[in-house]
Length: 594
Image (cartoon, rainbow, N blue to C red; front, side, top):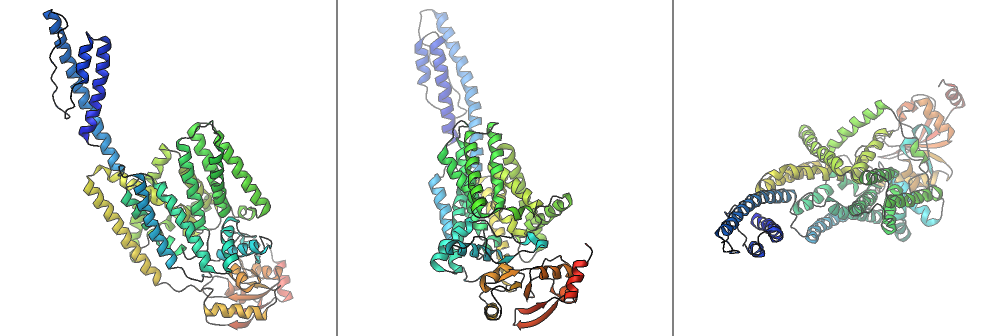
């Protein structure tokens, strides 16, 4: 809408208002009719009064009426000029935020095209194997196997180490992601590539919801660029080839954020809205049932609701009851999060250390593979933009997204383990969204071509950064994979030379349990040799498998003479030992001071 048209509309409203007033209180109705027939004019034009209407033969009355017209016309000129200025400012602000004239459907179509491009690239580059190092995947696959075969859900042949409960939950993971994988296992067996395709589809659903979540914060073309930059960031790109819960969790958590955002735009606090409450409850539980940290969505929703309505709405009560019922059902039927609670460590020193760790880790989102100073500087600038954008939204909106981000980061800071970029990945889309929205907000004061040039420079710089990161990744050492010949040789040796009841020790314990069908535990990284010997004796461990790229404290253990390790198998990647614990060493370990 041009300023001229907007100004004309504002003037018409003023004219109609004055006409109505004159008709009610003026000397005659003919004056009011004259006002309503005045033509629109350009902003700033000088308006002259219409000819006086003869109501009486008295010259004094005609002169008074003409003076009244002049006074009204002058006032109209003043108010019209002020209205024009307001309209021009409003139009400038609106267009600077986004191309809001673009139809919503067309905006979404372009975003969906970007999502389709991402999905084709992700699916086309999937591999049929999986690295040992990312050991969680094996637990999810064993859970899916148990669901299909009717075995106990928690029977994943993992032997927990009481000194390192934070390394992996004792009884496995929540059931939602295994439920997603179960149909694939039913139809295809241990087809890891097919399972990865289903996981990538979850990422596609997340991206579709992310397009809608961005809303009008950034222009349409920038939405497409944001989808591509998010998806081809090395953190997300590498995740595509892993069977981990991050992508399903993104799907459930962001669908919950989007649904809550839409519902609360027009929510009546006295309305129950059971259908919408059920949908949101299923999504909230889906996030919790995929990763236990998703529980923070529920208190975040409570805070957002109370901030909006000053007291809990009926809708919120329905959501809390339904979500709580689903969580309770999971705890009864499948698994409870008791083992996670033991990994929470409340300490001011530890919390500060974790904050520093994750602050440094965030800079690796912008890894360029060549210049660490450039990586840090850009990370600081973009993080500052994201922080400002987040604080503005927290102050103005106080929505579920802001409280969720605060709660999620709080849990990371009190968690014993530092899980790096995997821990930050579920909230990185919010980081991108806040940063980009604030960038476009700051550049909105410039002319159109300047804004486009600055945005193009930003995206080109980020694209160059990504190319450097991909080159760096390609130069890294190969991670030992379950499909490597050395791994298959190890699995075959274990199947032929060990008993089903034997306990093995290996850093990637659940991966070995999946492919060797044996009970497997792992040593705690910080244990002394005496503590490690005690653990081996307590679980009656018979075999120990070593890979030099993994971090079991084997050298310290072999040099302590508390354990006798006899080599029985070796290839280019693995070495396997028979474990013997002398009785004297075992007694000495038990008698050692605490």
